[in-house]
Length: 280
Image 1: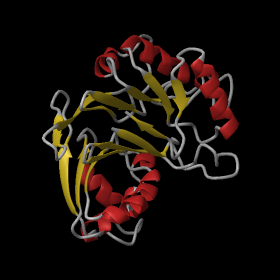
Image 2: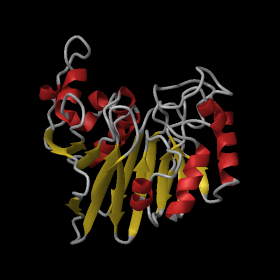
Image 3: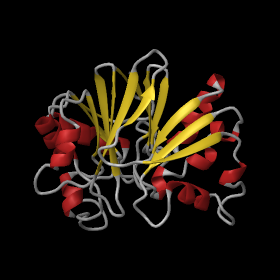
Image 4: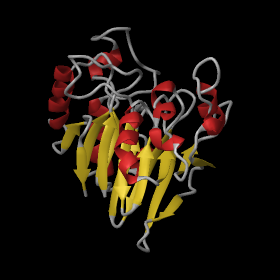
């Protein structure tokens, strides 16, 4: 299994000299499991992934959406493989808002927001509803299976947390979820013994409480902190923790400091950065 980070920011892209080390693109994580290409979220980092995939076409991709807030879908209209005939893209998401995943993606590409409609893209697209306790299985091309299991997180309008298992290795993608007073038992169950836990650590504890940063307290905004990430990793028995969905106001230096503090709580920990690759 190979995990590659193409977008690691939350809320809005944040390019500039103060974010060049970590990167400014929003959420997009690629997982290669055997011959299976799985992608978690379609933030602006998806555009860069699409460019890298051009040399591999025709491709079959499995694109899992945590939810459909803008910072998780805005890269899709710029995903080059979606415009090419011969490519097959399976798209998975929740039907827990007023529109389906297909209707939401089509809506952001409708007039007057975008010049090309979803129906004009050349790739074949197949949409699937994600349901809790109903795993998605994909053949890896070598007789083994990739299994993706989902559980609901804690975010306004809903969010899905995903676990991918393949050949004895595992990764959990848990973005845009807010901690509770106790560690979320659903996430503990989903992340039990996972090799890599990718978790929403948008805020520091001080930013979350409103004693630092801008905009006052962030309670109820649907995001978590690095100390809660470490707590979940310990309780779930995760082997490695990756802090994800960095706040757009956090500079490279601020992310490094968040990483340093998190390592005092959970030693096998790092902050997600564009281009980071983890091999299992």
